[in-house]
Image: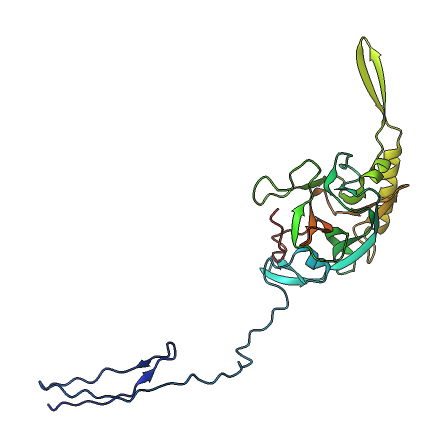
Length: 308
């Protein structure tokens, strides 16, 4: 059978830009056929063209998971909640509500439950400049426009954006959790939180008088409560009830006024432990303090929590 060969054109690999030469045909003759040569081929890259509409990636209307921090939510960042029935994330509306100005005479700030757990030894380790600062809540509403849950509460000390977050620890305690992922906060047994200067708290919940006596050579102490603390907390409870469940209101917010400053309180929606953080800018200045109330990570996976 006579030998035959069909010359195949060189093939350009789009993946590598190399010229691939096909193998020559085979012959049954014992005499090798002369090698055919092809001129070198130089392939120019295909001209670039703008992607078609089908190739363009649509811009996400909400950030990816774990990209929103607490400060972003107060400045209008969209929030998504997990719809467990359909196993998907859906956008939920949030509402920012100013509830007054916190008067801070000494800069020794306290955060806690003013109706049950807040005591004089709970002054926070960081001090703020004395002054007047806005207090704001971030709320989710129900279909009737009434507050369904309180997500965050904060006091704003200055304009700017936090570069890092630090656990708001009580003076003398380590602000870093003892183990990775651990979170600490103040306990609430009356479903209420607040921010207050230590000097104002001393007036709001004055210590009872101590009467000492010696009987049988032993010193006895009798603590006498004059009723002022109970009266002040009763006034605060009535004020909280006035805004609870009202359209455009909250789960309750109110202030108690002392002679030097005030206490600003807000309903939490239930008894819990409330993690609280300092927002600190790149220069080390305090921007804000935020208490996290109902921002469960499983329900709101887009929100980035601080490490500490």
